[in-house]
Image (cartoon, rainbow, N blue to C red; front, side, top):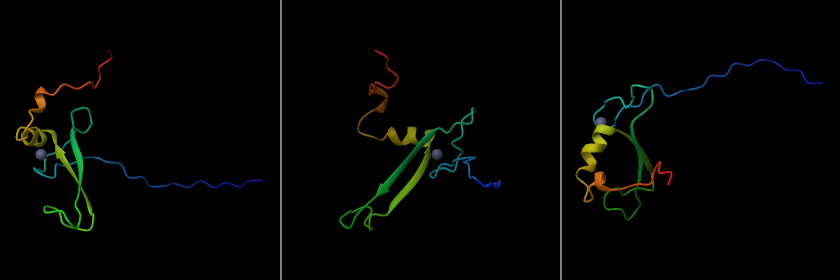
Length: 87
Ligand SMILES: [Zn+2]
């Protein structure tokens, strides 16, 4: 025979994600989040992030990502992707 009791557990949910560059909310009008999350880790020989493989996580809004990607060597607007392609 099993005897049960009811427990209530707390759960954390994300209510907003703020851009680590400009502070703007990444929340879209439908409650979704627009932007990117990326991780950076260096190493003992890294000239930019010399550490013990600490992984740092950042959230950046789509507006900052757009400005950032304009500085890339490749124009991301000309890159064709197969995302959503049903061919
Ligand atoms: Zn931003």
